[in-house]
Length: 589
Image 1 (cartoon, rainbow, N blue to C red):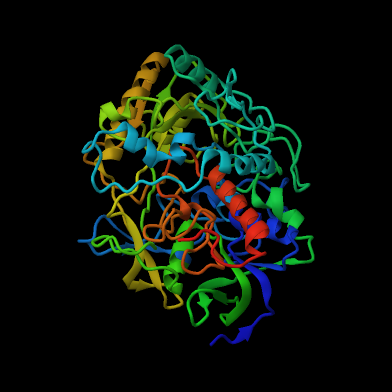
Image 2: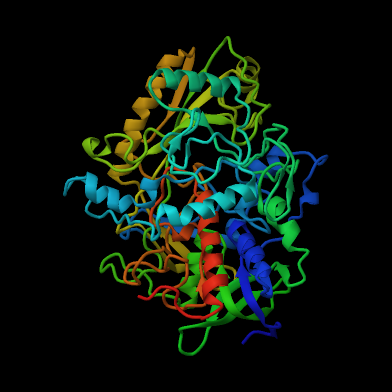
């Protein structure tokens, strides 16, 4: 039994990143007594705001604001015939740690999924002949319509002060924006970031090739902004320290800059840091939760009673807590029984780096989201059925940072010593990238469960990931490589390097790709093949809600943050307007 029992609250929130912060303010505004529990430290803006320097080695190399593998390792294998081994150093992804979570160190690209992404299974059933797609593919529709979720994406746009160029306003295509985006009820709150030489060259070239470029949608705000909660953001000064860094200038939308400064002033909200939640405690009937148990900074077990439990940590942590707590049946890939752990998906990136002797790109003058992209190669916008795969990518040229460590140099340049220094003198600021960020489908054999061999420092099993690339995603990569190389040919660089997956590639956990992990506790229309209903409410334990990337049934080519924000707002609205009046399942199974 826990050593300590806290006072009961109406709502306990586990994890204080984007989803946890949104839930905190929305439920506190409804008059509920809300307590958030965060495993990591507090991260108030004054700890990293200007004039404190942006330290590339500390943040981008030593991962200052990320959870350590010791605290949150998982084990990884390609298939069920292998023994999974634990991560000892972050590589492919870097989960956040502390107040703000991954929302503190994100780049700030805030792009919505398309209407087809929301109903991908419906599209696949209509567009693909039987037998074209992998029989082990397990894609699903999201359990809501565009019309239902768009108002919540619109609200999240306003919370973040989203900067960009509108492409589809209430069904009317707008010049300069994405003609393939879903219908917006309102224009972008703020105008787009300024183009750089990098992005203007890319945009002019791909437009000439018949594509439809538009500025990267940005949560690095372009003008002073006051959001619906009354939080104020300052205009971006294009310092380039966004991805993997807290913002020095109050210009990047994060939980701190958009929500937490407001909700922390509310008397019915409080939060505890250094609180590592180890389980959700259930009543004897297993149908409702009575609270959560956490380990505090003095290594004591503490029970936090609550009427409603919100699991809003990083995707991996949410899935693991459900497994550790016995909420829902664990997924079995052989029988396909069970729901917790199914439909895990990651994504792949790729790029070509183009070097020009006669161009200066000034990469140090940039924002995290600076760049242009096009959405012509997303599901429904090109002949994926004829090419034999499903999915797509945003193809972009983004200039996110000019930090020297990791700067690309031409092939053959030494990686260290005098040769590297000479290469930096000759080539720093003379390159641009053309990149892809792809979708990733879910499969029968890609899943998360508890590892039978490895435990964390508190004696609990680590989460185990079973994942590898499938031919669908590798075929997509090869098709996209051809498009990128065609663009590069038009740009006529003096030298070029490329980085794309081959048809025989395996997933490499050691090289950074993205922190956009999804699935494992997905939303759906039936408890037979999903863990959560459309409001991210557990089918099995009705006072537990689990908003986050874990709820996605597969990964689309857009960054996930816009939809994570929207489904959290959708869930908060359902809790305040429906659940509180009549606690119980919001959707009948």
